[in-house]
Length: 371
Image 1: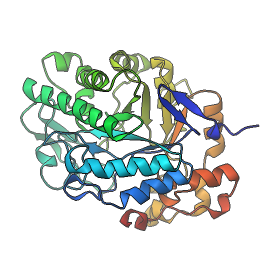
Image 2: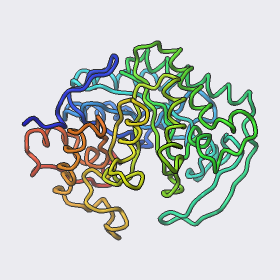
Image 3: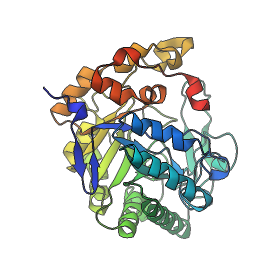
Image 4: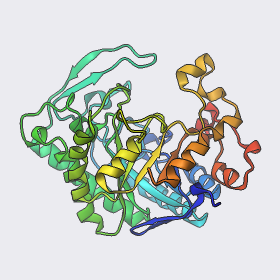
């Protein structure tokens, strides 16, 4: 029988050779917003290794407060020629690449301004207690004004058009993990009393609609979606399937082609009384294809790995959970699978899994992030 992971997939103008997606992962190697020249080789190697779709790490849209820090790549200005070389190299190796567009907002993970002094729906950012962090409760800045909201929406549209002109095969709008769009979606950080508070999806939907208007009807627009936040793993935008559907419907109507569902562990059910994970529920409720993933190639959580951390896991773990993954894709729970650490560790992960050469898989090591 054919391997579900290596069946082709097409939607809109996007045709993929297999179902394997390189998760959007930032490298922090773009001083002043300009990607290091070694990004070309970095992404090219993953395409050469038969990764079907590569999603760039977050790139800052054309807005002065968009970047998470001073080393996040931009999708405007002097960064454009570098991205053009990257996309050309990926295409030359048979790969496809999507640009992830984001705005950090009041995301307090970066230790220095401007991230501490960013925009947010209500001027409110709430930090939870995660591994190695001390909870600090609330931080407040001024809520975004209507004019600031309009400026950010326009910035997403400009950068979407830039990505299309570069030759990217689609765009992904980052609406997950506590960044600006997600801050509007989450009731804890969106306490506005205007229409953007009454309809928490309105900001995201207007960004999607503006991007769709800019790029036309054919270019795929993905939306990166998560329940959890980087500061709160237990957070949920929708506590029930009905609440989740209410959040998704305006995004579909605005023009989303596919949802990229960020999950920490793809095998965990999202709601009681069903084995469906988040990607499965989003596909069922929205009618759109989904990308699932989370934990592929890891046998344990980072806490369970202990002091050695995920960096020390052996290469054989890079195939952990693949049989269950194949079963879920085969029955149509979700359509594509995002792979993170395993493809960071071995750029030829997809090819080696396809050919059965799994004994030669390289483990994920921290030095891979240092070029």
